[in-house]
Image (cartoon, rainbow, N blue to C red; front, side, top):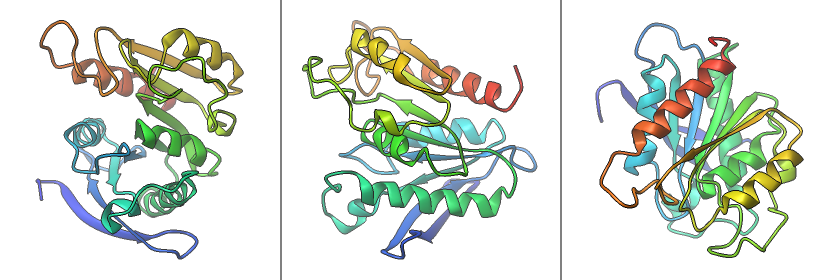
Amino acid sequence: MAPGTIDVEFPTPDGAGVVRGIVHAPALGEPRGAIIVTHGRSNDMKNPFVRRVAEAVSGADLLALRMNFRYVDARHSASRDRSAEEEDVHGAVRFARTAVPAAPIFVAGKSMGARVCARASSDPDVAGIISLGYPLHPMFRPEVKNPPEWPKIVKPALFVQGDHDPFCDLARMREELPRLTQPHELVVITNAGHSFEPKGGKRDTFLEVREAVLRWIARQLGDG
């Protein structure tokens, strides 16, 4: 394990299984909050992007928990309606609440993980959601409307999107955002794809993602 990280396990609230995760302790003192970081459909909590998100927020004095959805360890596929993965996130939120009894807890997801976090936003202990590459519609099919998890977003939300994301036409995203009932923000990473891979030149787009995430969290914590 990397310095400052701990392997953990915790049950799902419905008792259906156990979820594995890695906790990143905050850089200094008591955590000001916690964040659950979830992965996309075809990767896991060891994905470099997921790891870097957890490291970034722990460096900002939050406890970070990156986790595997159970289907990864079971070598299965994600549930069709994402309900099993939502239960995994609820378990992670309960785990985080024991570590931060009174501080805000945020949930963040990459791609499919963002859809799961949207479903889980109704959890009373969730203060807000961070979507990193929301798959708003099937690949290259922006005409498909009514994203199924959209009505379930009931907490403040940050959306970070690449402008070359085939799963999220930005015009369509801007049409959908006014439907949300809670404060929301869209940050567009230019010349970047669905996983924020750079287009048209080599650069580390994660630095721009990191800035957007930390700035939004700081505002939620009352820092600006």
